[in-house]
Amino acid sequence: MTEQDTIDRAQAGDTAALALLLQQHYPFVRSYMLKLTMNPTLTDDIVQDTMLKSMEKLHLYNGASKFSSWLITIATRIYVDLMRRQKVEKRWQEQATRSLRYQMEAHNVEWTDMLDSLGKLPPEQRAAILLKHYYGYTYPEIAEMLDWSEGTAKSRVFYGIEHIRKELR
Image (tube, rainbow, N blue to C red):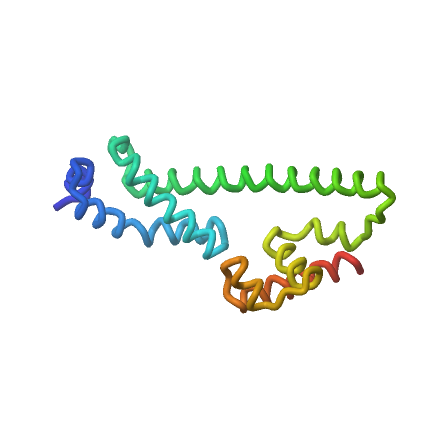
């Protein structure tokens, strides 16, 4: 059976053909995305989203390009959209930090370099540091609250503090 036969069967509703098709192309798409993102976790998320989107949009595949090229196009668009959203979120976070600083200073509350550094951390590290060092939660409590392993909670606190130390030097 050719790849086109498998595609035709999948488009006709054959779930076994669809599973086979996606299984055959998964390693190729994952390898490409790993090189593009340089982040295994992000890669796995994007590849999973790609496979889901391809299942939803399979009826739109018209054979004008190779099926693998079609999947790569979907994966790349998902990645670009994600990067665009993160850029917007980062700008929003920077604006929110500036606004908070202005509000605190307007009420004669000191804004420290520490708060600036804390605002520059990724949200996961910032949350872990606040929960550990400001609110006094233990690592097991943080892990449970944020649905992480205890090791992840520890590493996010550690790397966040390392980043703050570098910022404050």
